[in-house]
Length: 290
Image (cartoon, rainbow, N blue to C red; front, side, top):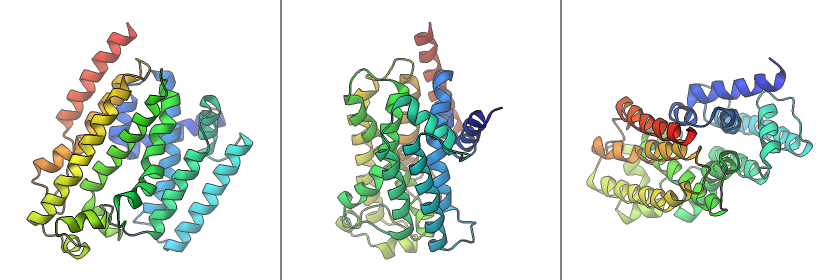
């Protein structure tokens, strides 16, 4: 195995290990496209691990320094068009093949840096600065790999990426508190009489439930607005993205099923639902292939 294929293999390993739902959806893509999606995921996951590894003994400043050093090297490699980094080789090869704008990776690294310094967001607009880099650009990076017939596919991909991220924020309120972060906008919490202190008390109240319902409605609205864009993707890519939309945005369905008790239970998409969604998508892909 040469160095480039070893890099793609490492990105695939990270995807399979850390992004089980994402990896499952990736298997619905035509095989030639998969390694490029793994490369994009590998870059994002590696940076995220530097920031969010709870078992790491590194201080916040040490993590910031490590992210800065690695991130700057990747950005330099992007400009040079080559890399000797274990993740960077596959990433640069993918970026070169599909002419993906470097600004997307700059935005992602900016958001990862924000995670080390920002503990809460006052307004939804404030949060969007973070979410654009952490999630929207992932959708924008994916579109050239997936193939598309109209540039409107990019706006839909951006909205779907945001919906995925917001669904995660709803599910992970308790986990994010352990890292000192709250991703639900403070002003929107206040509309329902919820304070940071109430969340940190980890007691489910009617006010918190109403605040979560508001956030869930936004996820579903974004998913609905993004849906027409799936039809603008290459036919062979549509089953994968439809499955990802159903599974990721479906997280909010699971939050409802546990009675919104995000402090004591983890909302997880059941294996049965994953199988049902994946099977339906696989059948669609078979029809397209034939």
